Length: 152
Image (cartoon, rainbow, N blue to C red; front, side, top):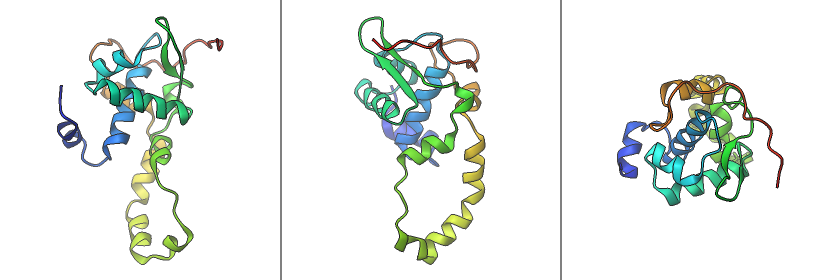
């Protein structure tokens, strides 16, 4: 299992929590059934406790739903092709304060990164999943959502 620092070095452009969340969402997108947190952790090479926290955050953000129990697990709320990278990044971003909008450095950074933000709004979890499927899951990322599950 790689350390958090080693995993971050594989993708230094993104903060670790966003990178790990994307890995987790791609893993769920590639599964035909709900996955338990420990299964996602094993498939993504992330620590189990950290994976559980990420899955909880993804549930709060509305990207995944879950059911408890031995036959429970986590699944995507909507198809991977409808979850955009920009949505995941926005969940972790701090809101910009009014006085920060006047800061010349922040305005320059916003101009410099506008193309990146535009690209992030086009890239989906399905796009990323094609490139990075879970190691224990085989086949392409599903574009169709899981069947609707009733809440128990």
